[in-house]
Amino acid sequence: MTESSDLRMNRIPLTHGAGQMPALGFGTLIPDPAVTISATKDALEAGFRHFDCAERYGNEREVGQALQAGLAAGGIRREDIFVTTKLWNTNHRPERVEPAFEASLERLKLSYLDLYLSHTPFAFQPGDDPDPRDQNGNVLYDHDVTLFDTWRAMESLVKHGKCRAIGLSDITLDTLKPLYDAARIKPAVVQVESHPYLPETELLEFCKERGVVLLAFAPLGHGMKPGLLEDPTISAIAARGGKTPAQVLLAWAVQRGTALLTTPTTSARAKENFDISRLPEDAFDEINRIQIRQRLNPVVNTGVPGFIPQSR
Ligand SMILES: NC(=O)c1ccc[n+]([C@@H]2O[C@H](COP(=O)([O-])OP(=O)(O)OC[C@H]3O[C@@H](n4cnc5c(N)ncnc54)[C@H](OP(=O)(O)O)[C@@H]3O)[C@@H](O)[C@H]2O)c1
Image (cartoon, rainbow, N blue to C red):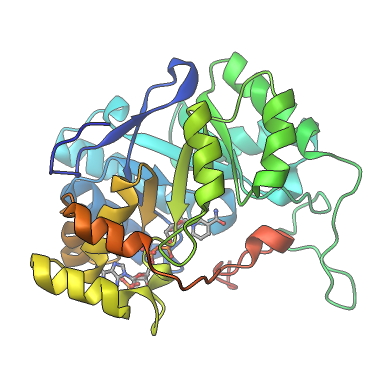
């Protein structure tokens, strides 16, 4: 990574020569279709070049439409942006992986992906219902497929040139280790919740030693209040440096060597969240010393996402 004070253009190399991931990523988990379109265009205009999508978000078509329009309007080439999408839990059976991947590509109006992630390590009963449940409301898991079976099918997408890199989301270190050891194509990226209240230090060390990018979601603590955006340490550092709490939190994430995903939904916030620069070392250390520990999203334990709009 570069050591410039300007963190906006930081890029992190991916393993196996799979290119570079812009550290600042825009996440598309946005309930409203019209807002998905406007926020994606605003993010592109503000300078974001990394877009995180998912089959499960139910808005790949809107993201694809916004990217196509935004690229044309800004004279930006496809290869100048980095696009990720994710395989949903109901498509873990190997024969379902490529069709799910192709359907996402078609909705996103793209000919290749930079990164394809398994959304969670949990396989749900295959079928069209993204949230299969029994009559008591319990999730119907699929015990006839392993994460490794799914990974093998994802590896063939890379071999056939359909995506540049593959990785895992909502994974714990204990689940990652055996898959990492057995994989022919090693995971290039792991996407997990991470912020000063959940630094995931052990996972980050494991990833750094192997050149795996840790891609942090909820860097602003999902915007929940009270929460990180009102944390007294963060607020004081922001006031001292003439920054906003969001800019401090995003800078901390990039400065510690992770990539991140944030979801501003207005043009002003897109500009604010993109405009980040290095924190002074004492401020960076002060954030590392925060003792509060809090996981906000239970998805890592169950495969059931905490923040998916119910209407989709
Ligand atoms: N793999 C997974 O299971 C998983 C789970 C969750 C998220 N994700 C990914 O991560 C992305 C990021 O989601 P996130 O919720 O973690 O994003 P986030 O940026 O940490 O939080 C979004 C919230 O922060 C608020 N916000 C954004 N910028 C702000 C600013 N400058 N000042 C104050 N508040 C601000 C937003 O409010 P407004 O809406 O009012 O603007 C929204 O409520 C998602 O879009 C998705 O791509 C992945």
